[in-house]
Length: 327
Image 1 (tube, rainbow, N blue to C red):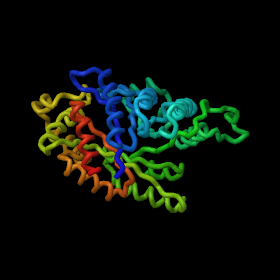
Image 2 (cartoon, rainbow, N blue to C red):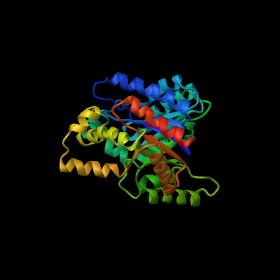
Image 3 (cartoon, helix red, strand yellow):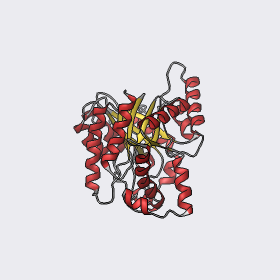
Image 4 (spheres, rainbow, N blue to C red):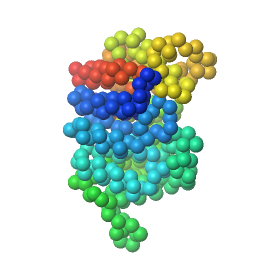
């Protein structure tokens, strides 16, 4: 089973945001040694506890610190940007690190309404134009505008030896249909979805096979998981994420703070709902559930998101999963 990592670049109470960024660099290097397929960085804006608003900036460092693991954005939130700017940035990365750059795209705001307004005044209008933005981005990446287009004489420089690989990320029927329409591999965020995920992914694969009968669809399934030596230890580690998710106003709290917190009934319901989309346990339990999800979704690859207060615990979680999968 192919394994990859989605990193939201969390930072914890008692640590600095600089430390969080350096931890991501170290984790990417370790992921490569463990044999992970790809390492994606998420984009967020002014969300407490998350550190990276510009994946391409961090990816430039990750590429220099690694040798072969694919690196990319999970995702560039395209309605915030002009496609030409994104094409330039990811062509630059693909020139520095040929054959290793993934350009995942999404349409979520990635932050509060106020942060969205500060970033892009016409966000909702751009969301409506999202399919056209994807087309324009692809044409800039390939220098593929028709001769009568306004941008036909614009070359996206530098021109890399291998183009960035575009992906479409989503959680809905609409995103799955758009991925087929735009002929893009699809990454489904199981950890975010309240919808019928397997049915959405199957509709993508079926539509793809009908539309492109000579090509194979490809699906990455993004899953939230925390793995530790014992189930009890994993459950303890998960308390920090649970408290952070229901509060959303601080860095990742310590396990001790989360253990002492008196969750309200409303918070308990929120945690219960979130836990249905999360895998927590010892290596055998976690891998068993990952394999089950892979089969249910018929996914080609599992991408794991892990958030804990302790960086060492997060690193160990990825290690235990990889070592168990690889035997």
